[in-house]
Length: 363
Ligand code: FUB
Image (cartoon, rainbow, N blue to C red; front, side, top):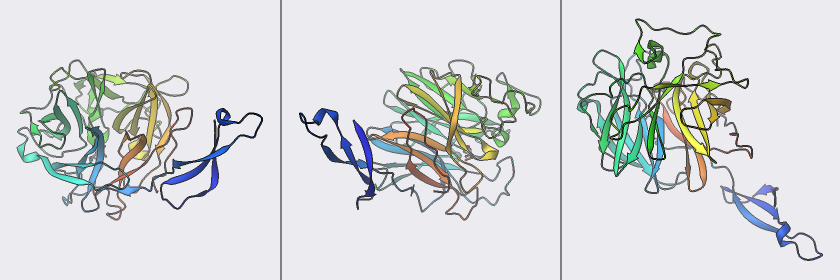
């Protein structure tokens, strides 16, 4: 079967006309018969919540509906610094929709508030949600009363919340940006973030006396992966490093800041392959690596998204009704204020060899 795009687009916004030649419809002794089919054409990038500032979208499909779990940015007046103090968020909303490209986005309101979390200090950053046995678990990073990031859990009976927090953070948890992935009934939590995310303060899951970065030619600080307990409320094991290799099979080096992990882990699968993606932080790229199991190792493959307006870049990748989407954020609507970010979605496409087509952050 040969698909060849014709030189024109039809008047319908999201479709492109292709001619299709099929050997199997070739009449005896005659020419191949081109027949016309309509195929999707790339969607236009869409801001999802124009009336508020939301960032770090974690997106899942539950019961055939798309649910978005973002951070809720706000103007706190705190000056911008490398510690991320200006990201001073205090609650989470949930959003949902049944049509990513044109559908109405429902705001389910505040589903978890910092004032209801007993161990809270400050800063509710990027969260994620998992579904198990009819319950929904939100995993969220939050500084405790000693200004140390821990990961907490809150539970809901419905994907749109409200979520009731556990009295304490997960034992042995640290750093930021939890992302949960279910595989064959097991749930894996990926987490970590440098600089303000405090990952450089830990080695072998123990807190260091003070933060320590490797030399530029040493292996980069790895993101962590850990299996969750059956009740979803604790770690079932010690967190493990998730290693990302370069094209020569060597771990990415700390000085390779165009590629090494910084924050914003996300995991998805495509055609049986695991795709781990992340932000490079100070070089503002979303990158990905592929592997064959949830613990890795992974091999670096390329850039998903070039830099957006704003310092941070953060995403999730989800399939809905046969189309793949990149949900992410930028600071265009706030005029470049990096702590006031806006949710976006655009289509994500794969090449035939499974590599992801790079998307422009300025689109
Ligand atoms: O939203 C606060 C932090 O900014 C997130 O946890 C990071 O991933 C970055 O997007």
